[in-house]
Amino acid sequence: MKEITPYLLEIYQAFKSDNIMSRLKHFDILTNSLFTLTQSLFDYKVQIEHHHAEIENKYFRYGMANHSIKKLLTGNRFFIINKQIKITDLFSAFALTRMQIESFAIMYYLFFDQVGTIEKDFRYDIYKLHGLQKQNKFPVEFKKNLEKKKKIENDIKTIIDKVTVYSKFQNSSLKEQKNYLNPSRAKLESTKDILTKSGIDANRINDMWNLYSNHAHGEHISDRQYNYIYKNKKSTLEETMTVISINTILTSTLCKLISGEFEGVKKKYDDLHLGDKVQIEVWTNLKNK
Image (cartoon, rainbow, N blue to C red; front, side):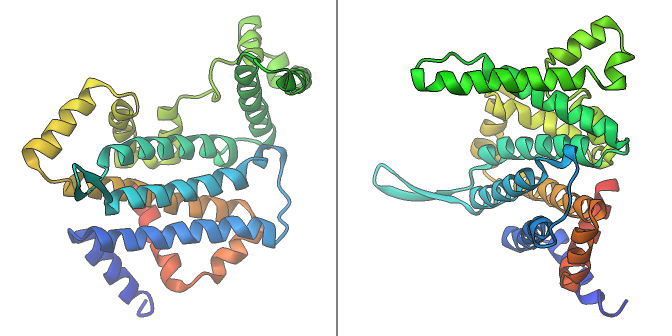
């Protein structure tokens, strides 16, 4: 216990402080752990299953977005009428955080949900089918893209043939089968339900996902928040801390989930610096608070 006390105290002080850079330091540590654990999939030549096909690229893109959020929160420097200013781009951070919540949800749904392997494989094939069908609807304006479109059409046929073999498909109603073969969404479950199952919703992250969607879509709530934060309150501190907290909890949870999914990643997790592991454990547990 004495070994971890200094790390716990440091996290507690950062959590209670109004120091953005201190909080971002802990966020950085977690993001680095996320990359380290993702790299271990390659280092340990981890054997993945069909539904894990996109796990490495999704984790890598998630980590890159974390660094983009950090840059937005540390302040953008630019010139307006020959005067240099530095401002926290909070609303872009809101939109990116919404994307990170969505990314977390799809990763939990495809890789970590407590359902059988066959169910996860089925989900992945529906997810892939949805994406290919959506891409296939894009107009082809150049001759060189005709071959790509033909390849997509062949891939769609292959996946449809595969989906129809699953017992879940064969035991479904005609209406359900039609939906499986022409999925309107990438997921068969709502983001809210997935967040609830993951335990993330206990921290009101689903509420923030709904709020941040207004910024991603440029809706009127985003106008009202801009006027309140930048013109009336003239402080972004509270909202910045919320963004950091949400992304810190999401990142630590993803670190725990991937280390529990693969033996090779668990070995890498066990080898992490003690302070890094304490960060992951503490912030993951906060998702239930």
